Image 1 (tube, rainbow, N blue to C red):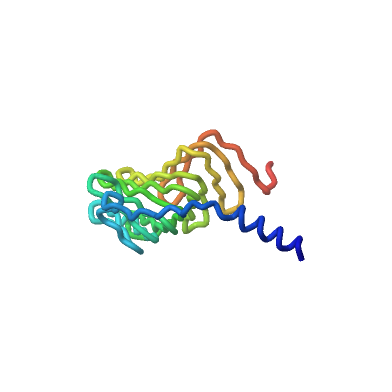
Image 2: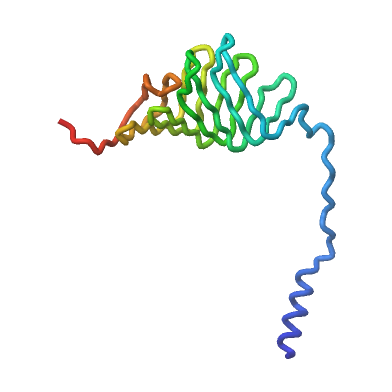
Length: 176
Protein backbone atom coordinates (compact mmCIF):
# COMPACT_ATOMS: atom_id res chain seq x y z
CA UNK A 1 0.00 0.00 0.00
CA UNK A 2 2.83 2.43 0.88
CA UNK A 3 4.58 1.56 -2.37
CA UNK A 4 1.39 2.47 -4.34
CA UNK A 5 1.04 5.81 -2.49
CA UNK A 6 4.70 6.70 -3.10
CA UNK A 7 4.37 5.83 -6.82
CA UNK A 8 1.15 7.81 -7.09
CA UNK A 9 2.72 10.82 -5.31
CA UNK A 10 5.77 10.76 -7.60
CA UNK A 11 3.51 10.57 -10.64
CA UNK A 12 1.45 13.56 -9.50
CA UNK A 13 4.54 15.63 -8.65
CA UNK A 14 6.29 14.94 -11.95
CA UNK A 15 3.18 15.55 -14.07
CA UNK A 16 2.43 18.95 -12.51
CA UNK A 17 4.87 21.53 -13.77
CA UNK A 18 3.05 24.63 -12.61
CA UNK A 19 2.99 25.98 -16.21
CA UNK A 20 -0.31 26.70 -17.82
CA UNK A 21 -1.02 25.44 -21.30
CA UNK A 22 -0.56 28.20 -23.87
CA UNK A 23 -3.75 29.78 -25.10
CA UNK A 24 -4.20 29.28 -28.81
CA UNK A 25 -4.40 32.65 -30.49
CA UNK A 26 -7.21 33.23 -32.94
CA UNK A 27 -6.29 33.53 -36.61
CA UNK A 28 -6.01 37.00 -38.00
CA UNK A 29 -7.68 37.96 -41.25
CA UNK A 30 -4.40 37.80 -43.19
CA UNK A 31 -4.43 34.01 -42.78
CA UNK A 32 -7.77 33.62 -44.57
CA UNK A 33 -8.02 33.15 -48.32
CA UNK A 34 -10.02 35.44 -50.55
CA UNK A 35 -11.84 32.52 -52.15
CA UNK A 36 -12.32 29.09 -50.67
CA UNK A 37 -14.70 26.58 -52.22
CA UNK A 38 -15.55 23.13 -50.91
CA UNK A 39 -16.29 20.32 -53.43
CA UNK A 40 -15.59 22.48 -56.51
CA UNK A 41 -15.91 21.42 -60.13
CA UNK A 42 -13.48 23.17 -62.50
CA UNK A 43 -13.83 23.06 -66.29
CA UNK A 44 -10.96 23.99 -68.62
CA UNK A 45 -11.73 24.47 -72.30
CA UNK A 46 -9.82 25.51 -75.35
CA UNK A 47 -11.76 27.57 -77.88
CA UNK A 48 -15.07 26.38 -76.40
CA UNK A 49 -13.97 22.72 -76.60
CA UNK A 50 -13.99 20.88 -73.26
CA UNK A 51 -10.46 19.75 -72.32
CA UNK A 52 -10.59 18.91 -68.61
CA UNK A 53 -13.31 18.56 -66.00
CA UNK A 54 -11.86 18.24 -62.50
CA UNK A 55 -13.15 17.95 -58.95
CA UNK A 56 -11.53 17.91 -55.52
CA UNK A 57 -12.32 18.39 -51.87
CA UNK A 58 -11.35 22.06 -51.67
CA UNK A 59 -10.16 24.96 -53.83
CA UNK A 60 -8.26 28.02 -52.62
CA UNK A 61 -7.82 31.09 -54.82
CA UNK A 62 -6.35 34.50 -54.00
CA UNK A 63 -6.10 37.43 -56.41
CA UNK A 64 -2.95 37.27 -58.51
CA UNK A 65 -2.27 33.64 -57.58
CA UNK A 66 -2.99 30.32 -59.26
CA UNK A 67 -5.87 28.25 -57.92
CA UNK A 68 -4.92 25.37 -55.61
CA UNK A 69 -7.18 22.35 -55.69
CA UNK A 70 -6.50 19.68 -53.11
CA UNK A 71 -7.86 16.52 -51.57
CA UNK A 72 -8.95 13.61 -53.79
CA UNK A 73 -8.35 15.44 -57.06
CA UNK A 74 -9.89 13.71 -60.06
CA UNK A 75 -9.62 15.09 -63.60
CA UNK A 76 -11.30 13.77 -66.73
CA UNK A 77 -9.48 14.52 -70.00
CA UNK A 78 -11.36 14.93 -73.30
CA UNK A 79 -10.30 14.70 -76.95
CA UNK A 80 -10.88 17.43 -79.57
CA UNK A 81 -14.09 15.68 -80.66
CA UNK A 82 -15.45 15.78 -77.09
CA UNK A 83 -14.93 12.09 -76.36
CA UNK A 84 -13.46 11.04 -72.99
CA UNK A 85 -9.84 9.87 -73.20
CA UNK A 86 -8.43 9.36 -69.70
CA UNK A 87 -8.79 10.09 -66.01
CA UNK A 88 -6.15 11.45 -63.64
CA UNK A 89 -5.96 11.15 -59.85
CA UNK A 90 -3.69 13.19 -57.56
CA UNK A 91 -3.36 14.64 -54.06
CA UNK A 92 -3.49 18.26 -55.26
CA UNK A 93 -3.34 20.39 -58.39
CA UNK A 94 -2.45 23.93 -59.44
CA UNK A 95 -4.57 25.52 -62.12
CA UNK A 96 -2.49 28.22 -63.79
CA UNK A 97 -4.78 31.16 -64.46
CA UNK A 98 -2.87 32.72 -67.37
CA UNK A 99 -2.21 29.56 -69.42
CA UNK A 100 -4.98 27.26 -68.15
CA UNK A 101 -2.27 24.64 -67.67
CA UNK A 102 -3.03 22.04 -65.03
CA UNK A 103 -0.27 20.78 -62.71
CA UNK A 104 -1.00 17.64 -60.67
CA UNK A 105 1.10 17.03 -57.57
CA UNK A 106 1.48 13.98 -55.32
CA UNK A 107 0.55 10.36 -56.09
CA UNK A 108 -0.35 11.21 -59.68
CA UNK A 109 -1.96 8.40 -61.66
CA UNK A 110 -3.35 8.70 -65.20
CA UNK A 111 -5.44 5.86 -66.62
CA UNK A 112 -6.41 5.99 -70.30
CA UNK A 113 -9.70 4.58 -71.54
CA UNK A 114 -7.64 2.00 -73.45
CA UNK A 115 -5.99 0.71 -70.24
CA UNK A 116 -2.58 2.42 -70.30
CA UNK A 117 -1.42 3.73 -66.91
CA UNK A 118 1.10 6.39 -65.91
CA UNK A 119 2.28 7.00 -62.34
CA UNK A 120 4.52 9.85 -61.20
CA UNK A 121 4.88 12.49 -58.48
CA UNK A 122 4.26 15.60 -60.60
CA UNK A 123 2.61 16.05 -63.97
CA UNK A 124 1.79 19.05 -66.15
CA UNK A 125 -1.02 19.14 -68.66
CA UNK A 126 -0.14 21.76 -71.26
CA UNK A 127 -3.38 23.35 -72.45
CA UNK A 128 -1.86 24.92 -75.56
CA UNK A 129 -0.33 21.72 -76.94
CA UNK A 130 -2.79 19.36 -75.19
CA UNK A 131 0.14 17.28 -73.91
CA UNK A 132 0.89 15.52 -70.62
CA UNK A 133 4.46 16.19 -69.45
CA UNK A 134 6.45 14.98 -66.45
CA UNK A 135 10.08 15.71 -65.59
CA UNK A 136 10.02 13.32 -62.59
CA UNK A 137 10.53 9.58 -62.46
CA UNK A 138 7.63 7.70 -64.03
CA UNK A 139 6.15 4.22 -64.16
CA UNK A 140 4.22 3.44 -67.34
CA UNK A 141 2.18 0.23 -67.66
CA UNK A 142 0.92 -1.04 -71.03
CA UNK A 143 -2.24 -3.03 -71.75
CA UNK A 144 -0.08 -6.18 -71.74
CA UNK A 145 1.10 -5.29 -68.20
CA UNK A 146 4.63 -4.45 -69.38
CA UNK A 147 6.19 -1.86 -67.08
CA UNK A 148 8.51 0.89 -68.22
CA UNK A 149 10.43 3.20 -65.90
CA UNK A 150 12.14 6.44 -66.77
CA UNK A 151 12.81 10.04 -65.85
CA UNK A 152 10.68 12.28 -68.01
CA UNK A 153 7.54 11.59 -69.99
CA UNK A 154 5.55 13.23 -72.79
CA UNK A 155 2.25 12.08 -74.25
CA UNK A 156 -1.07 13.05 -75.71
CA UNK A 157 -4.07 12.95 -73.36
CA UNK A 158 -5.11 9.36 -74.10
CA UNK A 159 -1.51 8.10 -73.62
CA UNK A 160 -1.51 6.57 -77.13
CA UNK A 161 1.54 8.49 -78.43
CA UNK A 162 4.10 8.65 -75.64
CA UNK A 163 7.82 9.04 -75.07
CA UNK A 164 9.82 8.09 -71.97
CA UNK A 165 13.28 9.50 -71.39
CA UNK A 166 15.98 7.16 -69.99
CA UNK A 167 13.72 4.08 -70.22
CA UNK A 168 14.15 0.69 -68.57
CA UNK A 169 11.48 -1.94 -68.22
CA UNK A 170 10.09 -5.35 -67.47
CA UNK A 171 7.97 -7.60 -69.67
CA UNK A 172 6.44 -10.98 -69.04
CA UNK A 173 6.13 -11.62 -72.77
CA UNK A 174 8.56 -13.88 -74.59
CA UNK A 175 11.01 -11.83 -76.62
CA UNK A 176 12.15 -13.20 -79.97
